[in-house]
Length: 459
Image (cartoon, rainbow, N blue to C red):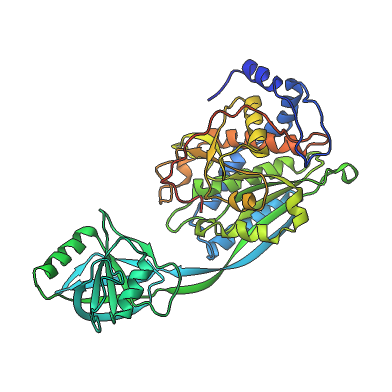
């Protein structure tokens, strides 16, 4: 929502500045016109075409964690930051990745559509199919499955427990079918030598097979699982640091601006999250020569889509002194889609903090009303658990192209990129510019909103 400049001035002028314990002194907020003049030092330097072009480069191919494409993106990002004069570092961290296998189910000569489970062992088994219900310990009491294939319905206990129970009874393989419509893609949680090969069927196919068995029909099946396994891989974070320009007057505080550069398989990841990375790069360019009394760290995280691995790895490298000195973390994830909703701020606990206050105040000054709500699943989460004020900036509801091959450059809105860059840039500079502390209570963010729960990637 855009507001007329006059209203923005009135609202901004009504803000008071209070100081959290991390700040050294209390000051009175300067007039709104003065605050906007400082904002303009950042805003007028933002070139949205730079952001758009960087998105285009980064989204030329999927950037799956641990692949050459991700490494190419890491090098590109580091080169960009270094070109602005920043001290840069590429941090590597190991992770385990499961290679998805090829699976097949053949019954009476017919191949049935099937899917795999993460961490299933490879293998081939042929045998009589036996329906064992939910494969609980009670279901399998007194049943000998030696050389047979267990047909199991989803529900009640974990997939791993179902497989372990069937294997303990002697099953050479397991078929788990869905208890709701659609295909079934699941995980066994972690590797286990006691597992046997396992595949999934749809509810329709599973019910049909169970019905045949219930009618006394003997059914034989062949299960094949090929090419799966756990691989050791490496991903990377890119860290660029802007030291205070006047060391004698430095506040000893740190601000972190983050985004993640990896994407999911099959998706160019233009919005998720080349948009956040490219916006960070542009803000780094804009602030490179600006006077500051606060250290600013621009961090591009790897392997976010696999469980925030990069941001957890980065936070683990921080000393307690660094954690105490970081006064705020701004995470930008999916900030440019033309088909998404409004820009929203999310915190892990759903409560306002210094980051949301700063951004909400910046929104008032730049003409955008920001709402806030509760949501994790992006790289602000590890910072929160380390005791650092952090917030996610994302458009909600998300676009229909999320995590799909359609998340491409042509869906990116320059207007949304500009809006996000202005708000985050103004908020960060409110802290980083000389002799100005962060706001403690802006009191301009409306009531919380509900995030689109079906979105799972900002990980």
